[in-house]
Amino acid sequence: MHNRRKIELLVISDVHLGTKGCRATELLHYLKSVHPQTLILNGDIIDVWQFKKNYWPASHMKVVKHIIGLASKKTRVYYITGNHDEILRRFADFRIGNLHIVNQLVMELDGQKHWFFHGDVFDVIMQHSKWLAKAGAIGYDSLIWLNTVVNASRRRFGLNPVSLSKRIKDNVKSAVQYINNFELTAASLAAKKGYQRIVCGHIHHPEIKSIPVQKENIHYLNSGDWIENLSALEYDKGQWSLYYYQSQFHEVESDPRGQQETPSLEELKPKVLFQMMLEEFQA
Image (tube, rainbow, N blue to C red):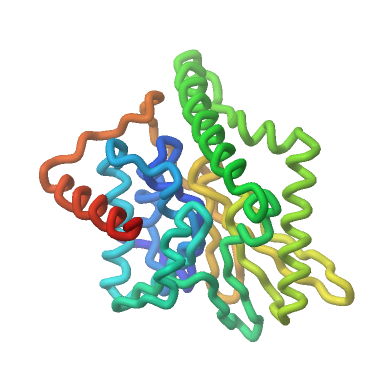
């Protein structure tokens, strides 16, 4: 794509490649529209929890190939591990060319210390009931699939799409309280460590806000996800902003059954190699 927007820093998280709820086509469209100096993949990019060999569409591989292509063209790429791709944590500090795998990242931007971290360390469920978190992830993916079916039907009648899970999270008090607790816990820990800003993912709730902690304000930023919100954080010319895909592009139609284009023979080879790589990681 010509005339790509140049930005200093781009943060995306919670893409969940390998699941039917992933909006890989839209993400690739967005990535092709920008030219970041630095790309931070802030966790849960590949969903190893729900990864199945019989579901890895060509569009998902295209996202991986595009990111690798960015790294080969002088974009610094940091892959910060999350809980759904925690298997990569054993490879922390691994580096090949411009691609780095890390568990967290500290970066100074305009004199402000930024702490980049996926955020699952703040999740009580993740720390004490991992099986429950995994069960919840499966239920969430099923809800996204159902949401796709519902929206496909609504479009046929000329109705606007809806987000079932977003409505649940916005209206259930316990879910709202969980998000608030997550944000406050993250900000408090950042203040204790001496960081002025913290950049997270994990809870699929895009946000830029200032949180008072004792006598200082901690700037909390969350990049959201590429399941429902289709959001990212962009940093350029000293300013952070939230980007929403739908506000810039027309929504890309998805097959309500979650099936995407069949990979060609050319696409199949990297697919097989990728599966072999995961098997090696799990050995």
